Length: 219
Image 1 (cartoon, rainbow, N blue to C red):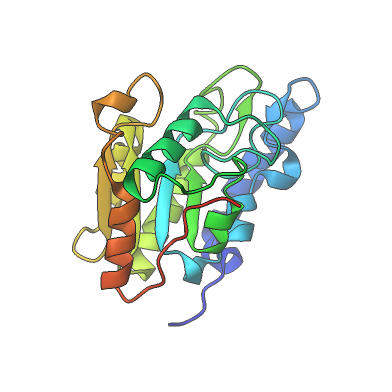
Image 2 (cartoon, rainbow, N blue to C red):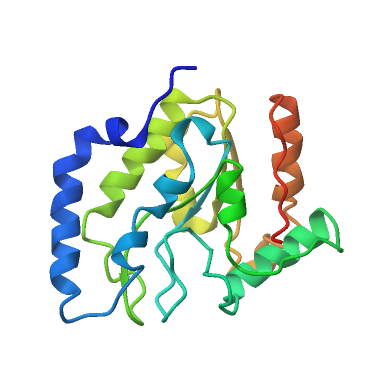
């Protein structure tokens, strides 16, 4: 496979990205915005384009202090896991192994294995979920999803909840996989997330594609 890199792939959206970042940096002078500047594009830094095997799509970052650090559903080491992440870990235990360990809520280990933890909106203001929904991030991240779909085959997209499932039209199910269920939020987890078995299904599909399976533990 030809080696693509994010810098070249996103060249077409460079001007748009610069405009969004400038707007956000101006807001930072009088608003608390998450994640920090250095972490806004962390998902691209931790998972190379050619290494992507799984995409987990979130909406926007955690909006409370010290939580968001650029990866969907993940928090920094030492930070208490938010309810959605706790439910993700519960489902992994039910699905894979009840003895599996999660020593923190930092999901970098997944990123290094090819799990692309993408939020559709990359920034948020303190205590204001969805506050940056009209900033233009979705144009960029929809483009990213389309790039993954176009250049890859056998990638598994996990779309949790109605918002993520709106992105289904960007994915060609003849060449990539889509697994859908409810969001892991406590408000909807019993509608299907518990018992979805997405994590074992991902590994089954990776074996079928002759790819190395994901170690879902966090140690």
